[in-house]
Image 1 (tube, rainbow, N blue to C red):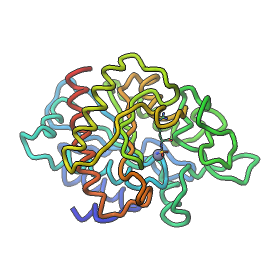
Image 2 (image 1 turned 120 degrees about the vertical axis):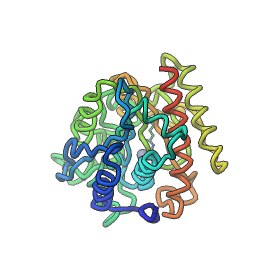
Image 3 (image 1 turned 135 degrees about the vertical axis):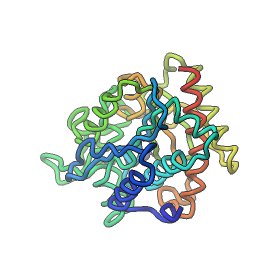
Image 4 (image 1 turned 45 degrees about the vertical axis):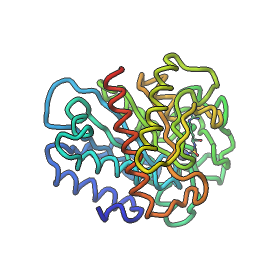
Length: 303
Ligand code: 0X9
Ligand code: ZN
């Protein structure tokens, strides 16, 4: 699909959502805006499931929390594309009979556009900070779970500024309300780059979570599923083993939203880093999709 030949703008991503809504009226549902960014851009959400009715579990895929991690939003959209085009009878298509997939592919649209137009290496949102000329909150330090206890800064000029309090940023507040509005939620993945990691809880402490064995089997299985596509080696470990950092999306999912929460750090391991060439969007997306299919099946069968 030529859509994935290059990194797309906020406007192009929204146009693609509109296209999918008309091309796949039975499986695709545009949920419109779940809130607004600091600069007033819409935080868009959509849902993919089959026409089959009955009780279904919900999985949330979140992309683009960090502005410069362009492949995160691209991969989130690629996963949606892969579900929409899954051949009838395939394992992926079968998932849609028992699951609803909810997508928020661009959770930091202001930062993303700023990274595209002005500063490629921007990470945070673009909210103003009272008493400082520095802009932005790190949206992956602003969630209400052990907020600011480790790996975060109270300096508004820092790239890991955690905000004035948990959910002080409109983006995290809106996303958290959206996630909690899904009564059938069971699991969620927050997509980032780079490093090629499958990160299980916890991210804020080295302590093992309850059900550590479940998380380890799931994370290792995702790692193996990803590798089976092109041989790409991801590392399966806890978030804290990368470095402890609190107030992140994944820990909030697990602790506060009772979801099986993971972070995936997509390609690569540092050759290109955040500036991953656009020709790698499709392979990165294909192997990530294999990981997501494994994850969805595992959650469906084991939770
Ligand atoms: O530091 C982060 O927010 C993530 N890495 S990134 O390079 N994409 O910024 C890792 C988050 C892992 N999860 C937790 N530490 N909770
Ligand atoms: Zn990130």
